[in-house]
Length: 316
Image (cartoon, one colour):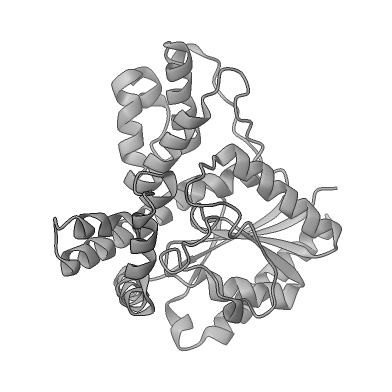
């Protein structure tokens, strides 16, 4: 029998953290981090990492497991996330995977196999970081440049296959279009997918407000400390919330310009996240616009939905 799993996804600032803790408390759950940058120690404010007070005693896994100077691939995340999920299930708790890094979430949940022969982990990490920073369309353009035939067959939002196609070309010098096509992967867990959304204008207002709050909480000092350690070019420091301040430290822009760039990048990232999850997973979406004033009611609705879905899967 497959382990049960709840997957909670959605764009940045939509309210995943708060809801995930309510889910865990009501469903006897533990949370597995699905954000590519919350795994790094010392990157707390910029990644909106859950605080001890916010967690309210709910265990969180795969948070603060690497130093910012370490590389960490999707294959490593897949291994670690599945171990955490199985461990939670063995303790008769409900694993709840929460995050906005779509590629990591999909790698953990679906029957996706990373190449063991000739694979270049550094190149894969480069592609994963690139798509997280620049988006699926820019990644797809890379494939279009080296393998137009595959690019016409693979949707830009299918970043798993786009990355694999680029890897094949990188490893063999031959187009992926000459290889056998991949079958569509299936979830390896008994999974309930839920997603949070919100009206665009309201979400963008929340993003801007959250950036202002991060600045007030000391984000600039957090980034300055990492920058002073010579970590500017590391994979971890390419995260939104960190890289925007490097030009300010180098006297290439004002603080106001850096903050505005952070807000802009965060808004663009939120749009890409929503588009990606819509195209990649069978998600039941819940609009959180009303949850600002009626959080308990919306949380209750989602908890009821999850309970019913889990009950249905148990009886089937």
